[in-house]
Amino acid sequence: MNEKKDDLQEFTWLDHLNELRKKGFYIVIVFLLTFIVGFFFAKPAFMFIKTSPGLENVTWNVFHPADAFKIYMKFALVNALIFSIPWTLLQIWFYIRPGLHKYERKEVLFYIPLSFLLFLIGLVFTYFLIVPFIFSFISYLNKDLGFVETYGVTQYFSFLFNILIPISLVFQLPALLAFFTRIGLLNPQFLVKIRKHAYMALIVLAALITPPDLTMDITVALLMIILYEISVIMSKYIFRKHVQRKRGHIKSITQQL
Image (tube, rainbow, N blue to C red):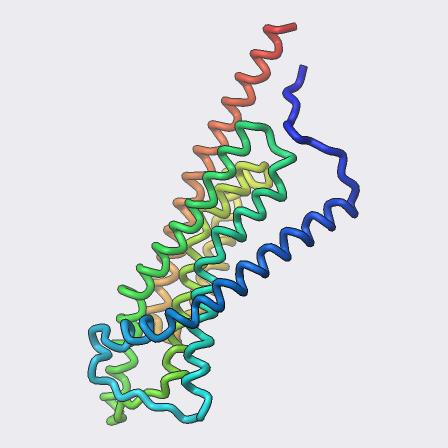
């Protein structure tokens, strides 16, 4: 006898669509709430960045009456993105939960904190290692050309977030590929087979999300390739454990017959 999935119901495509719409509504509500809360953290976050090493003596300028408001908006959006990620992943888990066995539910639920943790690691790594490297390089070019470094505040933070968010999202790669392996959409053999194509795609992506500097492009591309290889290792482990569990399940069923 096959193991039955708890709470399993026969859903029509309309039921699935309604459930998906409901989860999407919950995601939007939490995103808006975290966006509002983000306004209250905008000033402390701005002051923290403003006093970071290398930026203490930078002259900040506004070139438009709405620049201060734009800064609040940018920080609120980043805040909403960061803190709504766990809730968004949880809603996705609730959506696929009825189609999973009990042991699968616990395993899939594990990817929510893992994904959020990787995102935070990506933020810290990018802000404290990659961004200072880029900023030092650009500052060197400015001084070499005799430019006075006076920054437009909205331009600087657009530049910062355009680096910070994409690279931090790339850190989701191991969790994403591991999750797809767990639900059967990918397997380690496929990831190894497309390795060369994946490398090329990651190199192109690195060039797109970083400033036009060869050293920076190579650094980010190598980081992405390392993350991909970590994903392959995780995929192999998860796939092997999944196969072992299925064999044990089949063996127990055979013994009961």
